[in-house]
Image (cartoon, rainbow, N blue to C red; front, top):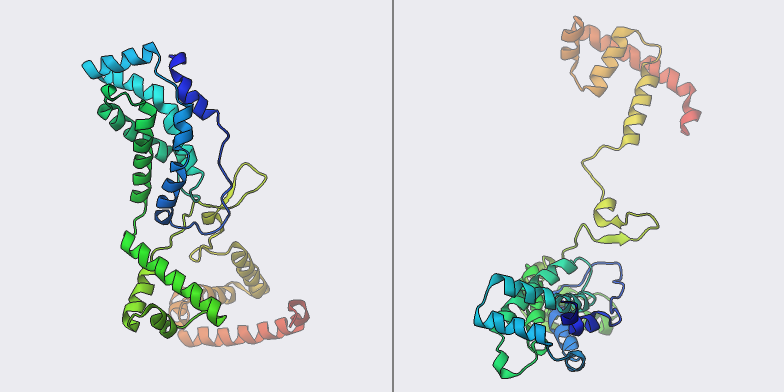
Length: 307
């Protein structure tokens, strides 16, 4: 089958059009689909000139499949034109923001290729490459549309809001107020507030998106730089333990337990007394005595703490 790949092999040898995507929040995919389709359509005529007529073996396979459609024959046709799917997938993928997987586009393109194989009519005398490319691209663009969870109407409103904001910023030299935006867009204030609320829900950032590239084998992702506010700072724990050792140094067992249970375990004087088999008043008396002694000790070491 090496000779049957002449058409698609020439396509895959064309220079790569992949570009580096700038770091930052990715723009929405839906707003770019029509633009991408228009750009790719400009190259259709050149691709038709690159394609070559079917050879005898491939034409025989086509006639065999059309006369008696079998899974094996269709798989062989899919394998033959698979480089064409990958080529178109790479061209679309190069124009997309970061976060879209090339394999997802190729998988969608394969389904478009299979539909084209089933619907192709040999009697029309049209080259299959010319017929299948729009179907492959259409399947990929449909897949991109399904990735966007926001309705297109909401996307359209968000784009209009963004355009109006930019026009007012250019004219006023500052960020416009909601009243100025409502006047610019000729909308009631409550409807504008609803539109702003919907537009704020449009922007999502993938946690797997690269934050920046490093020289190591692993790139830094968004999720790697997010602060875990529920996580405990290990330095704070060390400082807390050091302070506890400093405070309890020189105290006997009961005095140390009173400090630890009261300030670290947050027990009441009554609970501490029940634990140490002491009365509440005795615990309170010991606590006051311990605090006075600690204040005198720490006062001598105040310069060490920078106070």
